[in-house]
Amino acid sequence: DIGEKHEAAIPASEFAGEELPEAGRRIPAVLISRGRGDTLTRLSTLKARLQLGWEQVSKAFAEKARVRGQVKSAIKGGYLVDVAGVTGFLPASLADVHPVRKPQAFVGTGVRCYVVSLDEAKKQMVLSRKAVLEEELGKRRKKLLSELKSGAIRIGRIVRAGPAGLIVDIGGIEGLLATADIAWKDPDKAKAALTRGQKLRLRVLQVDAETGRVALGLKQFTPHPADALVHSLRLFHHVL
Image (cartoon, rainbow, N blue to C red):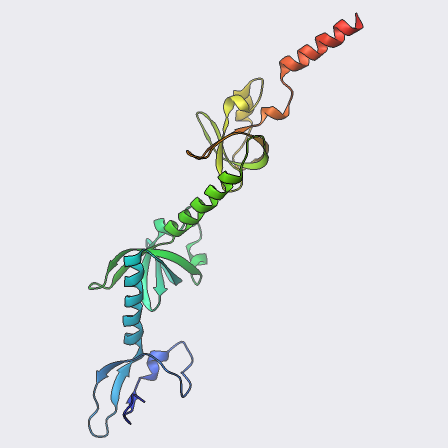
């Protein structure tokens, strides 16, 4: 029913993969052709949804707002994602902050993305889920930095090794475990014995909220060799 006692038809094929709407339900539709005589006016709900979808993604792109979508398939170089009826391309490089090792496992999942490129004339839309994840990580990192204090003890996981020491993840924040703070004696040898992914109990030595740099220490859990020597000398003099 399109009002004024007029009726129109929408092909049932436009509802493929979903249940046919019940009588009385309102659905969006656009005019395809006007009927004459016994021929009904023809409408399309798919084109209406697509038009509404483009309006939604265009608004999100202009306002730099997030959109929700569902990954429909994995293709060469990325994924096809449905956003409000509009199919967008999510490049593999923008799908996650880390490389996706099992692309097919991504299919069928819901994603939050930013629209990074939009060309309605060519019906092309490029999405970035990575931008959303990085934004969330940034907020979480800022919160954790504000709560982190010097002297605190954290459990960290070694992410990678560098010339200055080891980069360690302490729950969403990466800190530097400098080579000199790994061990009191032969720190380079002690560093070589540690492996990527290994968990360590660490002490927070310094936090710079402005730069986001965090200095960590491992040797601080063991006595300084000089302190042990001084203690031994005191015991020796006490015995004498």
